[in-house]
Length: 435
Image 1 (cartoon, rainbow, N blue to C red):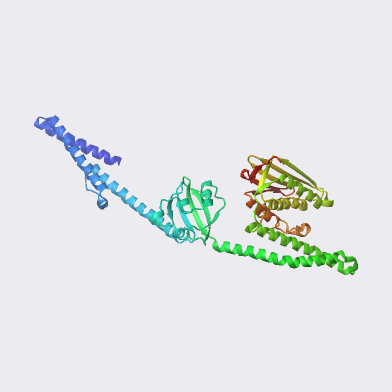
Image 2 (image 1 turned 90 degrees about the horizontal axis):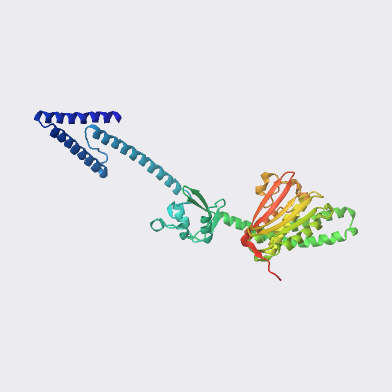
């Protein structure tokens, strides 16, 4: 380009020099120079006009104007840039079209919105699952089309670590799992997955466990009753039967505990139990649980202490809270060696509340902690017979906390003991009134 400009400059100076010499020959060198300059200016304006017309007319964009000198080079280089642009644009359109086609082939709904929630694009599955219409819904705010308060709150939080489940606004029989991801300038990529089948299977499982547990309770109660009678009159039985009867009574008691926990967990999960939201004196409640824990400790002589700080009550269901807190405290007794120390603390302030149960037991490896609240999961299955637990205690704790807007934090290291902390938000607190 530098060479072309130098050549053009030489041609221009040569032309002006020639016109000046012609004027000098006629006796008017100034007029000759001016005439040459005017001609160059008119020619340049003409080329500029041709350039403007060429760029303004898309139909002639593939045929650049023919010219000489620098203008010819300008037209040719612009034509090459335009061809390169058209080629790149075609490639991008092809890629975008392929992405849209592949996204439309997905069974999951995919929606793109801006930071405010205005809908920019969605695939066919999103239109099917959520009832979006391209001719009317483009540019609409998505939370005006999905009119579920929980979705609006989920969209605004920007905390998308866990997905949200809701029913489709267009097809109420479809259960959706919605996951949002942030990209760009807080734009949203929303994926809606149909989990109706999984939800139905989970419901069937819960119904099955609930029904079987209820059906087992009556025969177990009868068996346990007769076994208790036999145990009470074991002295009248032959010696070889006493051990068998005591073993059967112990296993029947464990079965009853398992059925009781299954029924309780089923009621908490399904909401069959009416959930009270009355102010609960957790201080008094945990003191009672600690007293029961000392009785459970018996000859192990655990050192169980309870500390309370704060003047707030907790709005919630006292029976469910008792189940959750007693599971944590009794677990600490079961898994802490004799003479061990168990510290229970209840702390409330304007930021929320927390119940901590800390022990000096064997501790738990980090690999097990994420799964501890699963049903029947055990970090050390070999200790099952020693502790006599059902494997449902922490699952009950998790669901009770979910019902009370709380969360469970587990801190533990092998050989350093464990600490289970129940966190509750400030909205759950109530000021204790004078009686």
